[in-house]
Length: 173
Image 1 (cartoon, rainbow, N blue to C red):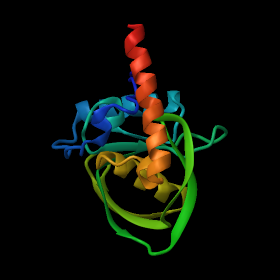
Image 2 (image 1 turned 60 degrees about the horizontal axis):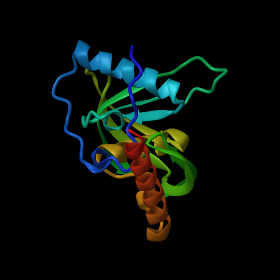
Image 3 (image 1 turned 60 degrees about the vertical axis):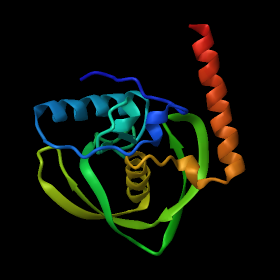
């Protein structure tokens, strides 16, 4: 397992739609393991493949708290096939937009169709934090960031801040 670099805003890859995974094989399972290692190291509770520069429809999640055993899950080609009318609100952050947090409203429940790391098809209903994390990560696969749900003014301020940081990093090199 290798820890990969997480790409940050304003990297244009974050706004691209990810392509479907064609085959579930050992190479893909190795990528899942790398993504989990990267997510745990960050630390985070969800990570989409595009966040490590691989625009494939793959994400990993683990909501286990520090004192609980790890409970990693891989979602290959995930698709939200239903979402509730009821909404819930969580404070969201993103490993690709460090130190930025805001409250986002999303459907309280979702039904997600996906393949697991062995290629087995599943369709499950999720609620609570898991529903929010899955929607956040699936948004990544569709080129949508959580800041896209904020007002244009807030989003613009965040994007300008990260563009300035990226320019400063390039100038140091």
